[in-house]
Length: 81
Image 1: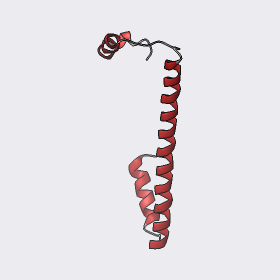
Image 2: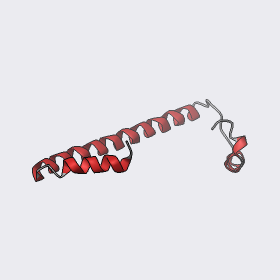
Image 3: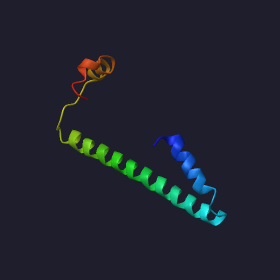
Image 4: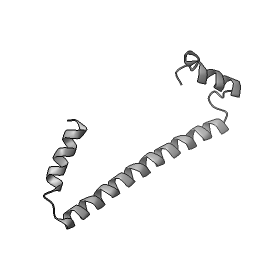
């Protein structure tokens, strides 16, 4: 189902709700979006901290600034990054 179709169907139901019901559903939607954003931020922070710990232990490959610039401009030199 495409987004415009979904939006139209949602609006059909939305127009049948009372103001109190709309406020309630809006509150639930806001909470859902906020929790999802916090989960994504938490996972991103966890990944960064794991990579930092590996780097500090000397594990994995470190790149020089010239290597990073070279990989940025030459896709074939990224080695699956």
